[in-house]
Length: 273
Image 1 (tube, rainbow, N blue to C red):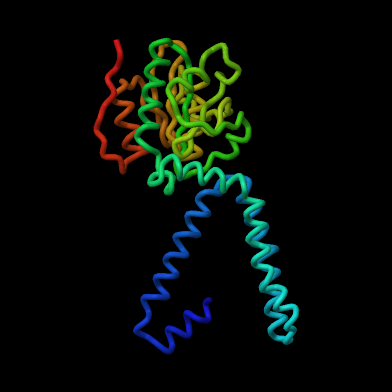
Image 2 (image 1 turned 45 degrees about the vertical axis):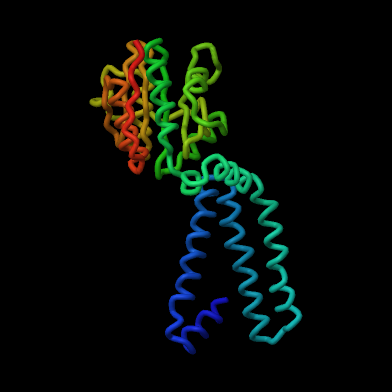
């Protein structure tokens, strides 16, 4: 493939746009594929395959070409078809998850954007939990992957819904103590344990949820929504800082700015009496 590109460029300089377009398309496809498996167990498998499998095949091919071992070269080249089938089998969970995401939302799901509907559901849940003085901590993942904390909790794969969030944090459910983690508009973990902040000045007089929310925001770029069990107060921790006592509309605006800046919907959720 690369030989054909170089031949086209050397013999037909005016045909530069064709190879460049092919490279751009392949780059986008590879990026999309990697974005689906980033932060999953399949990422480690891919690194192993890339280091051992692809590297070994390339070395053997070079040796076979230099030594003119035609049978070995033919065998290595034909291993590509078998490798494609192996990739489909090994990465079956990631492929199924990607197809589900594309089917549910063919535009935003493709690029992993956090939709406005998910933000609205989080705000609705926060408003309901706040009125009932039910403590909660909801983490919205951004660029920094939170796979370590997800693995330490209970793994889920569910669409974000206010009813589900309220159910998870109900005091009589076994998942209510830890945090919920949202990734790409889906709940991927519950009852997740977060690190406490060591900043005693900022968290003075605050409970465990607030210290955990601030602690995670110091280590990652996630947005952490915290509802106080004692007062029902809604707070948001970002980058080691916390905003206390947010109204529902303020929470909606903040999450829209931080987690879905590309969404132009300005609809605000009115707080129920």
